[in-house]
Structure formats: C-alpha cells, structure tokens
Length: 193
Image (cartoon, rainbow, N blue to C red):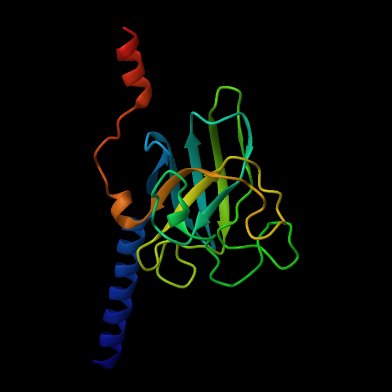
C-alpha cells in the first residue's frame, strides 16, 4: 500500500509539472514602443537549463541594440523606468564579457537591419519559466527591454546602452492576452488614402 501511494504521488507530481510546462512555454509577449504602439513580439520557450527568446521587432533604427530582461513586470512609458534594473537574482555584475558577470537577464545585442526589423533567437542560460529563484515568471513576472544603443558588455550598471525604447511584460497574464493590438502602420495608410 505504501509503494502504491508513493507511485501515485510521483505520477501526480510529473503530471502537474507537465501541465505547468504547457501553460508557461511557449510564452509570447507583445513589445511596445514609448507611444504604446505594438512593434513586435518576444516568444520565450523553456528548455533544459535555459530559456530561448525569439525576438521579432520592427520600426527601430538600424544598428546594434542592447536587450535585457528587467526585474519588474511594468512597462510604463515613455522611459520604461518602472521595469527596474536588470533581472539579477545572483547579485552578479553586468555584462556578458565581465569577469564577475553576467546578470541572468543579460543577452547579446540584437542587430536591426536597414528596413528597421530584426528577427533573432537569443538564449538566457540558467533562466526558467518554471517556479524557482531563476524564473522569469516569479512573483508577478519580469519585463524585456530593448535599448537605443548597443550594450558594451562590461560597463556598470547597464552597458551604456542608452534609453529604453521598447518594453514588453513577461507574465502569465500577458501571455494569455488574446486581443490583437492595433497596427500603427495601418492607421497611417488609412490617413494617406
């Protein structure tokens, strides 16, 4: 009887973990500029020992831009300072090239093409969408920020990446949002006609 109870508990735990994984991964987050126009998406997928992030964005200036996960699920414009600092549960220094870094939320720069778009896949080693200290969904969640300039990979506290120009809330509530955002380019086309 004791073994049967243990088997049932193990089976139930595995089933609950599988259900949690399904509801949390993949998680699509909308990205907004300072005018609250939807400019893209970031899709987070839980992998073993990391989270992958597929970023698709438009309407940015050509060149390299810093991108990070920040500690609070708040994207109040126009400067997105409500997102707080970089997500850093281990208290490390900033920068993928820093000998005492990096923040868990630090990612490589993204390169925006001449047409203002980027479509890249990045990784957050050690991060998770499941419960735990390194979860991007812990407490109420986190946010993802794109900066106006490149992250130099070592300067404190944020790589001299400049202003925060795009933000998206990483939370289960945001991932379930089914209403379609307006497309600012469609409004402009109607006004031109």
